[in-house]
Amino acid sequence: MKKHMKWAIPALILFFLLFGLRVYGAYQNEREGAMVRAAVAERQAAEINAEVGRLQSRADCNLLWMKYKNAQLDKQIAELEGNFAPTPIEPSCSGYATSSTDH
Image 1 (cartoon, rainbow, N blue to C red):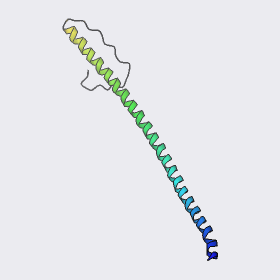
Image 2: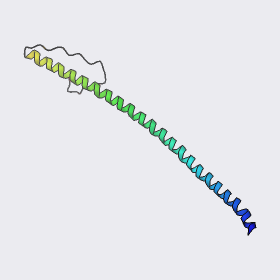
Image 3: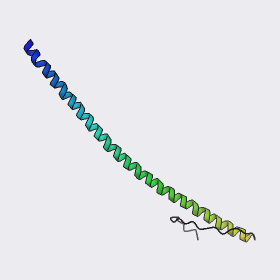
């Protein structure tokens, strides 16, 4: 019986050591995978934020051009009524897409 105990304790220690290394390896693999997924998500978020910025700039520019066109119409109406209206200042931004009906 003592002969079996002599090998059982080192065998159990070896078993738990190997089991612990396997668990640690799985943890490291999951950690590395999570870091890769986080880096990909961060890059995608940056791309989305850049696109949002571009779209916001385009929307802001379109709003300025719409206000400019409205001010031009207000000036024309005022002149037809014999009144004075200030000349609107054309926006400095580009990117406003006029429709084919705007002339």
